[in-house]
Image (tube, rainbow, N blue to C red; front, side):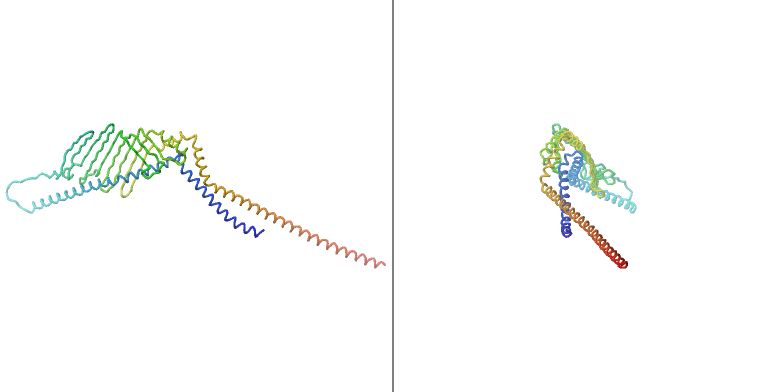
Length: 386
């Protein structure tokens, strides 16, 4: 029995290790299931959507940064060339003053020249207009130091019911405290399609389409740092999303999205070599979606999760069978332990009986010897009497 149990305990240890791996695997599968339907959980939907919207925001920032970088580079080159001109002008002044001090002139007339304030290229004012288009520009010059004014460009486009307005200021003057580039944009009542899934987010993240009002502003400097903010209001909005893998779950998700009719989105963004990229988004969509799902899916949500869980359980049915056999193995182990305890009990009882028998045998031998001695003494006394 001891040999059998020793061999069995080795097998039992291996079985327990397999059981632990199996239970961990089942738990992992169930966690994966929960993650797959988390978009329908109002509590989890918020964080999932915020992560995806942030991801899309960083993608947009990376998409448009090269254009901003080109503009900053061009404006910086203007500032550098303007600075060189100023340095040359200062050097010429010093040379003239030095010449005046070192030379003497004959009697005559003093002649004065005004400061050169006219750059090689100067467009003082521009106004252009056309079918729904209007453009204004002032002080477009090749040397802002000579002109003493920054570039300013403004324009608007009106088409049907859509209105776009934009403005751009470039200030490359030496010593100015203003930003190198300042730009702004506003648009109203124009169609906009915003598909976050194309920006690297999940396929189930919604797509927004509708008439929108947008405003944005940005400032940038020659070190390529920039900061700005943007606001978007889409109303009415049509919101659609991908499939969730379950017909019922997809139906609830789609119905919830259809009930959302507007979207508000705000963003603050920045970049500097020291701080890196910064992006802060503020949107009401996560709350709208959570409320919509709650109103549509409260009665069905648990059924949806059970339906998907049932499909998963079918795939891990073999694991459940294995768990059943592991349980049977445990029963065998318990029975073997019980048999061992029974044998140990019998062995203990036999030992006790053996001790009792030994004691009885010894007592009987003593009694027999004592009786024999008594009989012998009695016979000896009888002989003496005779």
